Image 1 (cartoon, rainbow, N blue to C red):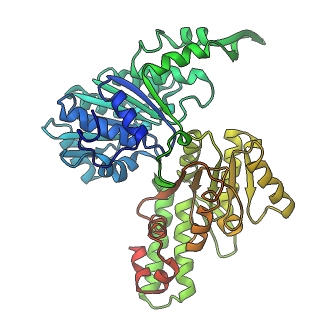
Image 2: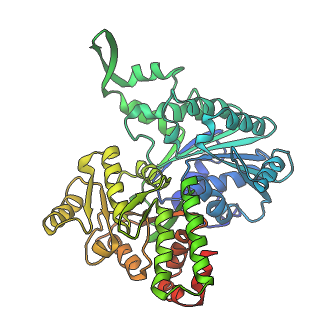
Image 3: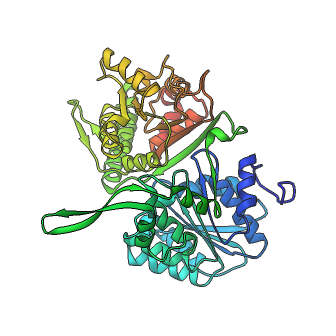
Length: 479
């Protein structure tokens, strides 16, 4: 079916149309599409097609904590065809009154398309599994696992639950840019969710015996098998091709030069408490008329710090607050196999980011460029990133946002943004400049309903934030 036949809401790129055409009628299929190539759109076009043809009436989307709200806020409204009437709900273990109304309503069958979005962590609990079972039990469903490496561990409780639930769905899809983050054994559970017969093995252990090279090891009184390498990978690759579509950004010649995406995080209870107390203090001082212009910036800065996971007191000491932001960043980096720039505007964040990335990806994978980095280290770190094997460039836009040539990267993550519009524009151009051979994908990590979220939206609209803050508009940022 050509794009002129199906009423796509947004016109697909050539690779998206190919992926859709290959997969739209398949019961199970994997989209191994690199971040920034638009795999969510392919899925939503497939959902529209199957719903129009009476094949499905329900969709269950399972996504990581940092990604699941992006489906409801951006992807579905942008790409699901306009003629489709749909309802959606976001599952919560402890829903607020309005959320509970939506969940109670969506469980009932109807003629419109019903979409439920669940955090992958929900399937670690009996409550989440029970609700999903009841939802799938009375429907013609498609089940989608976004960033399917979250179910790569075959022994994890959530993996077992999701695979079992998948058997209840008529159609199944997995989405990820990098299905293998550690080794080929990552593939088993992801493919088992799609169809237990795709790889031709009845258990993980028989799959491992076929493709892993193992030796017997003894440690004290304990003996075990250790994986030392892999074999028959060409055979495995041939099997994957039968039920998957693979594309990298550098293969997509029609992508726009720049693309943007949000990765949403929720405030922890500790952050919510600190944010609420700080906001109330700010508004109280404003109403009393005791706030000076410099203090307005300070107020917003404190709120922004809290949304990022720390606060700096009047003595310059940093107090860390439990947050979900660093976890969202680490999830993102699992999806990336190319060079990546990570921008953050606070010293406390830069230190934490570098530490966690080294723990996850290795000491040699990370270089830094910010206030604490001396001139000699800066030159060496640029070389390590642009010429050698360092994958992540962790930097402050105020320090590294001007003049550097970092076009080896085509993924840019903003862990946090400053209020300075010039810093944003200049830092974007470190990757998007002469010599860049690929589309550049920008990802903003943001906490919904906070000053953080409003800063990003204003930057995207190329507004002068400082002017807003000093004028009459700034007070609205605290509402």
